[in-house]
Length: 247
Image (cartoon, rainbow, N blue to C red; front, top):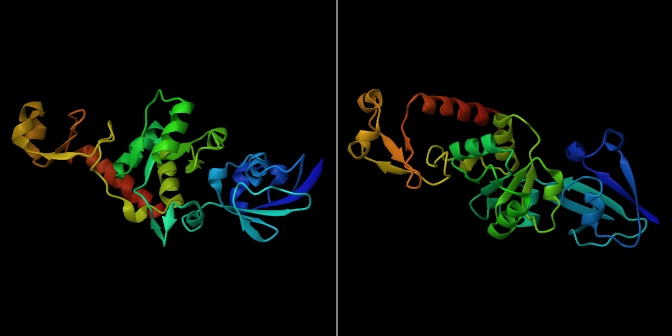
């Protein structure tokens, strides 16, 4: 049995028990485990880590740990995501898209309001979440830490808050998405991009007051849901304003 010293940045304290927060952690182990294994044994998913220093040298997750090593762990951020390939020269390398576990339905709706591609089903299972995230380069959002420790997950985030409005604020801040917000162009049911539609084409589907007071409509080509700037639109505008002011 050998040991090493692990120093965890304070921003990762959410994953540590109270007895280990803000302290150097002495980790004991057999053999030469990977630094990924050692860190995750403390409850920190690899998706939450932006940089690792072993004896002051930057390493990847495959680095083997040896007796007496000094390990420092820093949280993921839009800046440190350079190491993961999510960002390049300060710009995101692909349009951000997400897959969410079945406990985050309201967050999925909120992300769609902001214009982000959010894959969600209320019956989706863990193995399917892993497959979608791994094969489609979707960022996995979950409240399940263990799920994020799956070795094939490259991009993911453990959602801290239990309130959907705070959750979407978290996501925008964590991935630096404020400048990419494009609200009201995605179906809240299907996640499909909306298309303009003439009032005449859908007049038979509209309530009398809607037909009388509104002229600008969008429709989902998948489920035929119709959208217009009614009271629901005003509520969503207020939501967007609150989130942007807090991001």
